[in-house]
Length: 484
Image 1 (tube, one colour):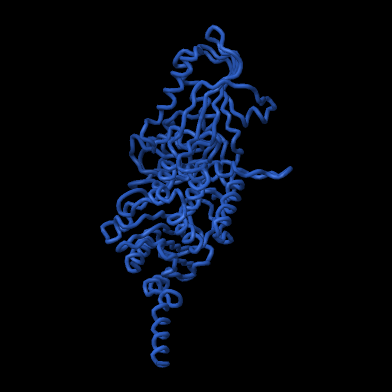
Image 2 (cartoon, rainbow, N blue to C red):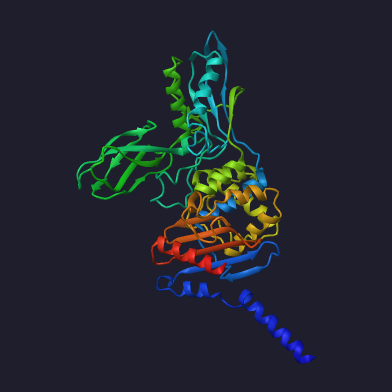
């Protein structure tokens, strides 16, 4: 009898060894590859139904998540704001309208909506502007004695996180997030390129925007570019570096709109003048007016309010296409819940980060490994642990009222979004939902895998490897296939 009990105990211990002690062979093989020397690797797989850890490797290691940080941002936004939340943007005026003349200013009141005029929405990017023009005409405004002023005061002027890299700022994928955003805060720079070794000629921007470009680009016989548009938030100067393909009649690079609030005021002014509306003063925005001491709060009358799609839809866009602007706008909107102390000076980013950490701590998740400096994951200083992400994923799947919205916000590998080529044609295609992340020497995935009716939460991070990102992506794909 005693021997049987000992045998049973030994068998139980052996059965649990792969889960709690032994490193799975696929992980061993990956971590022993030559280009993983000096790298950081972290993994956790949790059974959703039972909440048990199936596999773990360095689960408490603090690693750079890259865009996997968006899972934290979107989950928090859905939890706090709710899936039905919509951002409003209003046209308002002060003063009176007499005989077709607006005796006062016309304001664009922003609430932080990152999706106004976004190319990722089903409606045309200019549909909101057409409705605004019609509403202004219906209000009887034929002349504005004042100016068009954007009111972006809901957020501060720190559009980009101070922890972002110089090589990112100015490029289309790293736009600043402000109280007013438009057209994904992105423009296209149109170039005409000549023979190899020559400097391309700048043809213009779409939409038209006032930026001074310092052109240091060169052309070469290559299929695609390795070029950067470098610049700081709110500045109208940009520096062009790198190489673009030769002999192209039209070649475009994408950059970020430096000051979206001011740009939108000018854009609306231009559209109104095309319709015959006279405007006496030059367009402006809250930042400029406040710095000049001209800003005054007063009573305004609303002409029209434009609403964004639901947060449920915005979270899906954020995670499917890895939209950095959407994620950063969400973290700042979360931060509107924060109540600063007396004389406390705190940025819009930091307010959102504090609310985020407090929320998950309240839910019983250890937030010590969560170090956020934005909502998008662009900051290399961002850190998480696989265990934290695994616990968040389990919570969202089992306890959140927005479980369905969050899970479906993650794209299906092999089919859609930023992971449309990952796990393509494998047994996990259509059986998983994963958010990917990738910056220099960082590759990560987090989400859910469903096998034989059981759902698992997974988070895997590889940092500081010395191979290409493509090679690491292939290795992580192989790892997941072997684990499941």
